Amino acid sequence: MYIYNVTINIEEAIHDDWVKWMKEEHIPEMLNTGKFKKALMTRVMVTEAMGGITYSVQYTAENKAELEKYYEEDAERLRGKSKAFEGKFVAFRTEMQVISEQ
Image 1 (cartoon, one colour):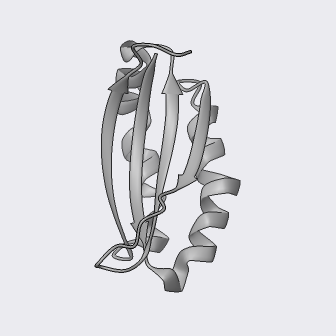
Image 2 (cartoon, helix red, strand yellow):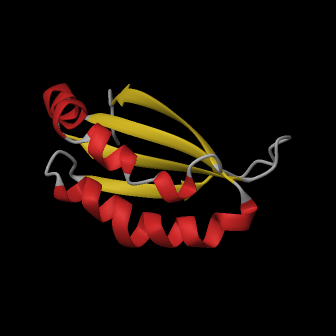
Image 3 (cartoon, helix red, strand yellow):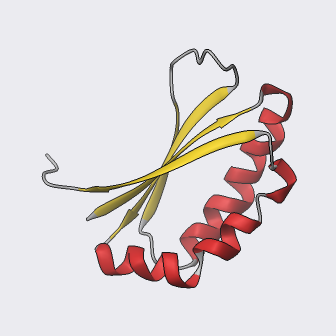
């Protein structure tokens, strides 16, 4: 299993609209690609010096090949749909390989 983690710090002024968009549009679209089995959206419980509210969204893929297919076939298009929030968030992405789950 692979986890594609996106950590996002979003400005408070647009926070509510962004959360609604994530829950109702973006995450369902990510899952509809068929590359991910599930998604988990969490709030990071830390106060950032730069302000804003931070979230981590973890998308679970069956294997590295599925994640690579997402990058090749869907990533650019889906990332482009965040234009309404452009300049109001900072995001970084990491890949994690699940070693053990108990």
